[in-house]
Amino acid sequence: MEFTLAGRRCKPCEGGVPALTEAQARELLPQLDAHWKLAPDGKSIQAQFNFRNYWQTTAFVNAVAWIAHQEDHHPDITFGYKTCTITYNTHAIGGLSDNDFICAAKVDALLRRPE
Amino acid sequence: MEFTLAGRRCKPCEGGVPALTEAQARELLPQLDAHWKLAPDGKSIQAQFNFRNYWQTTAFVNAVAWIAHQEDHHPDITFGYKTCTITYNTHAIGGLSDNDFICAAKVDALLRRPE
Amino acid sequence: MEFTLAGRRCKPCEGGVPALTEAQARELLPQLDAHWKLAPDGKSIQAQFNFRNYWQTTAFVNAVAWIAHQEDHHPDITFGYKTCTITYNTHAIGGLSDNDFICAAKVDALLRRPE
Amino acid sequence: MEFTLAGRRCKPCEGGVPALTEAQARELLPQLDAHWKLAPDGKSIQAQFNFRNYWQTTAFVNAVAWIAHQEDHHPDITFGYKTCTITYNTHAIGGLSDNDFICAAKVDALLRRPE
Image (cartoon, rainbow over the protein chains, first blue to last red):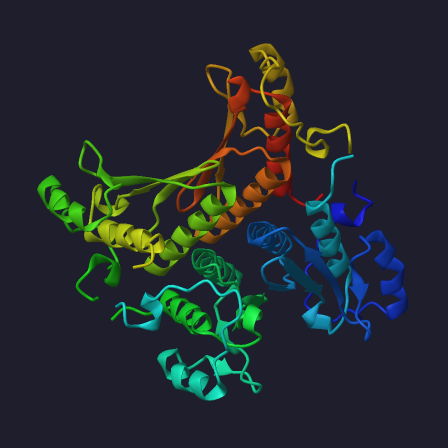
């Protein structure tokens, strides 16, 4: 499991490292579920999740907040009655880092259906 | 307390009633805390709240979600590490209703400081 | 509203003040909703709340947590699928203080039905 | 991962199957983190988790609630300022089932430290 994105942990990122290039980001993207999109400027990834009702939505928001706490990496979260949009980028470097993809993969794992 | 916005309850709104005019909305706005702004098109109200950390922010988000549940009126909520933006409007009528102001006043009450 | 329990704020309690006597606690109890009971030893108050499902229950738990945060006074909360039990006492004085009744009244306000 | 407890999904349990024997439960227990204990009567498992503050505690509670939702299997959760106790058993069969161990393993995964 250590080799999958979801099995890795975020590394502290205080800046000083280069952001992922758009090519690097496009290479990582297929490791995430298909709802994740790269922003046109290549500086963030975003996914929209749909739910049946407000309870599912808020429970999911809290589960994503737990990941943010564990990884010390905090997305922008927007939600309404049945929908939640999550955006990851790494402020300190003004673009995407591995951390963004690691957290996105952990969000995907929250929703993984049984095998 | 029944005469304050925060003391009222949302009425079910299935549409069919007219939205508040911009003048009506501007008249209600002073009953809310000063961080609430009317959107330029007069169709929604929005406020940004700042917190010390992620815990405060997510606890606040959950408290607002409780109001949404109690009133059956659900805002758009966007939050990151230390900030949360709340937008109320009434989808069914394509603009603002009393319900938006009632819920905004209840959000204000969450943050009321001791007398 | 300043004269009701729910309209007051908790005072910091570091101990050094006497706990409420059982007689004092019994006098405050009628200001709370009827589900609050005094423990047989007079040192805590407890109420059980029933909900329709897990979402209602967890949303309520989060709303109570917000009160705990705002008042810096933290109850014991036990919950399962459709039920939540809340117990207030003041550890620092080994018994009940006004703070416990203030917070319990605020919990009641969360569930207040429309007038 | 499919062969670990945390990688499995709960099966619907409406009763009609026998509960795990205490011997079976004792055999599964080492697959969980060491804080999980079998109740003296062999009918439930329980663990206590300690945190630094209320925020960590409530964030954890919400993360456990998400697992409960995903697996449709709901523990008893008790929490205060810095501590949270979780108890799993399967009401429908009056004792323990595989589902209890699967969910407990998923709770452990929430707290897994980086490799």
